[in-house]
Image (cartoon, rainbow, N blue to C red; front, top):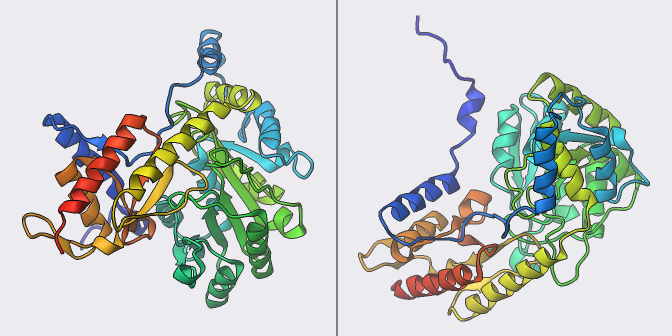
Length: 405
């Protein structure tokens, strides 16, 4: 008799990251002495503020490395209420601290889904959403918005889109989306989100909103905080953290979930018997970060880099850059170049092929749009030194110009 498979079938539903494969290829080129400009990943410019590093160093020196409560430090959970501006409608019992926003999301998914359940996911989803849902045994199903070209919504869902999908899959346990959206850099208004949450509530589905990039908004726009309607109170969970809000905090794995008590309490129990919350020292650094005056200079710097990217993109014939309301990314529409050939007569057609071509021909590392449901697009990160943004876009212009019809 053949031995039983060692790995769960869920493992095979979690695909390797295409972006990671491209990053490895980019490093290989760099090791061969080629100058590769990385416009793929999202790392905020600059180093972590000295005062935050000092908090962590002092905590280590003083030996403050003992266990914390299973759902996180009470002081940090309390501070999260002010960070999210939800003190009037939520309490510390509604907040779970986790080892990063992914862990927070995983804990929430673990307590609201079972094997075989369906989770509806924004069609322009961060590449991690689908494997996170699959790893828990549920099935991710994308929601594709209607009439994009006619409305110019740039892949934003409407309440009608969500309602249609929920009618097709009435047993769906949750709807998962981001605001602002990684990868498309679009921003839902409070009215748009409330309308979606209302539809979810009517179907008994939890609306999970990843707002990890909620501080990175431009042109003076403020985050669209939600009114405390019954649907929002009972069916909406916010996921957030520090990694995309502060300079040099990408590896500071502290995130949180804020939502209805029954979901948060259950997620806390699951976390307690699993990997546990974030390290005490990391939580202390996060507490210092979210209670200090925010670094508005970061927003000004990123907005300047965004504008530089747009100026460069406008000078490239047939290339279209989507508007950027938030995050540190921009979607570039390369559909008008599809089907063209390079110097070796190789046809460049898919998003993955464009990413590979730009790396091999121009030495620019970008993310293919197909990994986030955006075939015909590439995603570039502008949170790089200005000279890298300008040089990277100049190389993209030259490489696209070399393609032949």
